[in-house]
Image: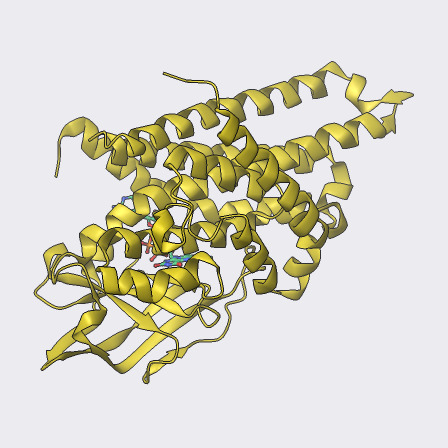
Length: 380
Ligand SMILES: Cc1cc2nc3c(=O)[nH]c(=O)nc-3n(C[C@H](O)[C@H](O)[C@H](O)COP(=O)(O)OP(=O)(O)OC[C@H]3O[C@@H](n4cnc5c(N)ncnc54)[C@H](O)[C@@H]3O)c2cc1C
């Protein structure tokens, strides 16, 4: 089923990789240490078309396919998985507004999002509802021509810096059918943010609680139809999972290349370490496993592009496999650096810390197995 990459796709890879090496990689460790979110650099990424990869061109987007996007996110993550991961989330939200928004909503938010003058956050998780997202309790009460939102969202990437928040809230009864999606803006009265969480990785972007305290929104902030929010949220995650998987591959590919270079330079027992066949075999296995994950990811992206009914299962398979593989490969690259791998200045321990969370967010890898198993057993 695999085709060769087209000229355009090869250009996406080389342009994005050049950008990642020039504008992200030299600063990635410093941003991690200082917990700096480089929004100015994101605007430069947007100038390359990375702010609205799935958004139609007439709304300022790049109108790329899912396969194009995973190529771009893998290339971007070779410079910094944390920045690439946030960019993937931003694009997921922009894509949701493009796909489910009215013409007025698209005109209002997409130009700013595509240029990354405005950033976006995806607000599903709550303190008491993560994997079981359909149990969320944030309320949206209808009041005349308005909705009033109350609740707390947990672990929200980009929160505080983002201008646009797609918030899933309960307008009806229990379960997924009672959930609707809303667009909340940073300046809306009643919206506030928790402190920036102290985390293991993904330090080059903020993670905060989003607190909604009587946020009063005009009815035209509803995205899609009342009760359709859970479906919008899950559809968004199919593509989002591909993006996160691609970021794992990019981070791990970078770690593999660093390890190869390091072994070529490092001498022990009278020879370059790269001459040790035991270590060469490790590099060979790491490259093989990444290539296998890449093949599955491209297969899943193509299925989503083609509207294949199996796409959600394939996206879950690819997310689970690529994020587990990416983490393992990066961790082995750290080991191949010996003690230096443990030092921040070599950049590998940061990749390991960044990739660890890819196994947790946008659905944990256990939940990916639940989705795949449902496809096998036919369970709802
Ligand atoms: C840095 C970071 C950024 C994030 N960004 C966002 C964001 O931007 N927007 C957003 O909405 N959320 C975000 N999240 C939240 C993330 O998606 C959730 O943490 C994740 O979905 C898991 O939910 P939980 O933490 O409540 O864990 P829980 O659901 O409480 O799970 C705890 C453990 O139980 C396992 N488990 C739960 N149910 C099952 C089951 N049925 N079968 C097998 N195992 C199960 C889980 O896999 C996990 O290992 C982010 C999280 C982090 C850490």
